[in-house]
Amino acid sequence: MTKDTQAAIQFSHVDYQSDGTEILHNITGWFPKKRITTLVGPSGAGKTTLFRLCNGLISPDSGEIYIDDKKISSYEPVELRRKVGIALQSAKMVPGTVRKNLALSFELQGKEMPIDTAEEMIRLVGLDESFLDRNAKDLSGGQRQKVSIARTLVMKPEILLLDEITSSLDRVSQQEIEELIVKINETYGTTIMWITHNLRQALSIGEYTWVMMDGELVETGESSLLKEPQNARVQTFVKGESE
Amino acid sequence: MSFLLLGLSLIFVLIPLILSKTLNLGLEKDAFVATIRAIIQLLAVGYILQFVFDAENFFYIFLMVILIIGAAVQNARKKGVSIRGITWKLVVTFVFIEVLTQGILLGLNITPATAQYIIPISGMVIGNSMVLSILFLNRFTSEIETREDETELILSLGGTPKQAIHRPLISSIQASTIPTIESQKTIGLVQLPGMMSGQIIAGADPLQAVMFQLLIIFLLLTTAVVTSAMLGFLSYPTLFNERMQLLKPEKK
Ligand SMILES: Nc1ncnc2c1ncn2[C@@H]1O[C@H](COP(=O)(O)OP(=O)(O)OP(=O)(O)O)[C@@H](O)[C@H]1O
Ligand SMILES: [Mg+2]
Image (cartoon, rainbow over all chains, first blue to last red; front, side, top):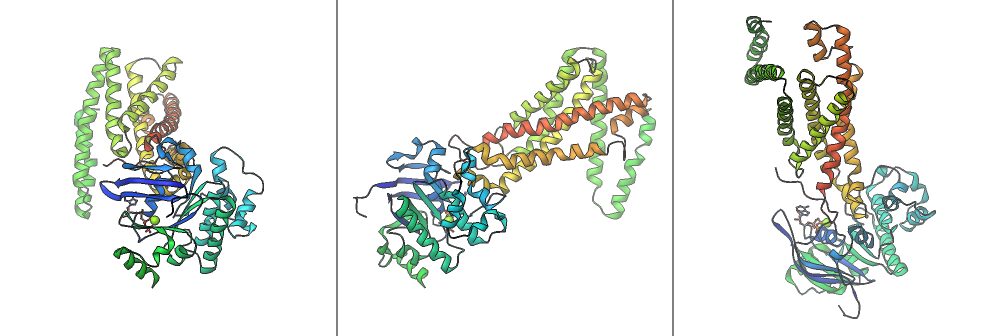
């Protein structure tokens, strides 16, 4: 990665354990500001855990994380979570309508959602306005993922973490979301980090890639590295995923 | 009633034992232990109460109340081991309930300040508070687990711990207090409450017995709601750390 870009998030020798088992080991690396970076790796590699660290849902046991060159611990938790928005893998909905879900981050601040925001956001993620008054629990998996992205986007985070948001979408919706990600990045200059199992997506959308395995960062650089990985384990992984 | 007659009433223990044996219900051991414990505990309490009533000394009353609270804490804490510092939270809750109820009763001269009133009423109030605590803690610990995704979602969007725990907390308070409220709706229709029955059998004027029972019902309503709400608001902050992160439950 060329060093002319600034780091939005930087990891320095980060370890994370849970109940005595090491989940992330000695992670050192960075995510370039205002760019799209994909994060790939087999199931259980620690990708979601890495995102939870960035959003402050958990803290590292050792090492340091910097957000915009400031230690993560120097941010107030609420400030950090609004700056680094996350669309969680579970795409959990709170009970109520889609509109209520979109308004959630405003409601949590004790504010009203600005007029037209819900309409704007729902259209942005490729759903029709009639969805706003539907009960969130009746949505399909793919629709929930779209609403979940919109709900996080409402806060206009500077950094956006997307955890497998296209996993239950059909090919057409996947493409829509891919275009959306590029559009958000271009329009708002949002730094985007995107976990995906889909190597085609990693190659075509993100400029940069992190490959994680067994709690370690094994390769990082421009996405084209996935075409000719250096590391033997990454070669096996890439071969397996592209079949 | 004499000890001889009480001995005869053991027939009522024999019947379930025989039934359990013939039908292979496997209840003999528990039924036997329960009977023995009830006999020993209640007789001991009877003698102690007699002693305390005769002594007419506030220190003994105080000691009895402490004992009641201690036993209640011991029983309820097992259900809340996953919540940090649950023992002290229960102590605070029970002491508060006791002070609140006795404060009103004695302060407004609703009941006289004698052992005869303070001890049984405290026993009923704390006993009920204990049952409520167990109901609440059971429900709350399971709600936290089943709604972890939702709690995490709210935190991830910049909500505070209080906002994140609001729904599990409120639904646990509701669920634990509903039985108390429900049972009071049918009281007197199906069965007479135990205390009232006891008083009537012992020869008290039924209207007097009813008035006391109503007093207890009102007390238990306060006890139920205050216990759950107080325990809930004391417990939820220890589920999070100062970085507003949801902590893993403490190991049993
Ligand atoms: N809260 C937790 N407690 C204990 N272990 C956990 C916890 N969260 C994750 N793990 C473990 O940490 C490892 C990494 O999990 P993580 O969810 O970060 O993987 P992932 O790369 O996101 O996987 P996937 O692609 O399946 O989503 C796994 O082995 C998982 O079992
Ligand atoms: Mg994951």
